[in-house]
Length: 321
Image 1 (cartoon, rainbow, N blue to C red):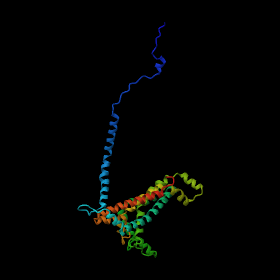
Image 2 (cartoon, one colour):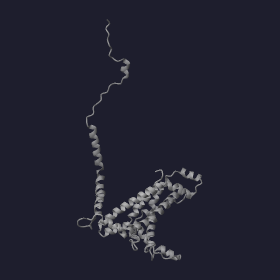
Image 3 (spheres, rainbow, N blue to C red):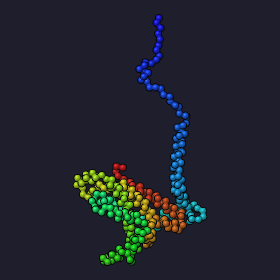
Image 4 (cartoon, one colour):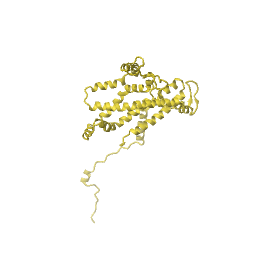
């Protein structure tokens, strides 16, 4: 009987094709988890300065102001809890609603005119071939970077009833002597005119960035369809800059709701509180050391501005969004 021997070696070709075996080093148990924990602690350590600053200067004052709005405190002594009394007092106070009405009128006089004007000037500077574009940009932006106190003093000198240059020109032309800063009819329009003069540079910067982002092909297509300059502005430019318009409307709403320095320096809230804005009404509580009512007033303004901002964003949101 022949002896059968089994060759357990692999063929030479197979040995040559197979890759050499590598020694896999084992990873110590828990090393990956410990490294992730270390990275997490390093991340917390790096952002801890911001968290401390936010807690000290934002979170704690906000919580304290919320507690203060339910209390009666005049800057000294112990807080006395009064519940919803501060809010009910404000919601039933005619002066509070009058200040909100004055602020609403200011918003209507300022925001639509300033927004459309900024879009129109930005479109003119972008699409036209004016020789003095840089000069016009400087003239529009210069009041925005000028200190507000200096601008307010110059405005008062221009619109003063007795020696103002505007009334002198009107009377020289046979017009009446208008009490721009001393009558209930013209006090709010005068302040609105000052705000438009002062802040139009900021609006122009935002709208210039939005209009310059529109591709020229869109205007070429509108021109081929026979659209004139006015229709192109309202049917092409305005819809395409709608996100920038929404942003500016929200920022303007926030600014007008807390507007204080402009009426304080021009009319002191008069005459007969006709130009007392919500910001000035809040200042009156702080000046009278009625800090609990002032804190409640602040939170009511926050809620109102939040609702108005959400409504403006919803209205100005494009259909594609």
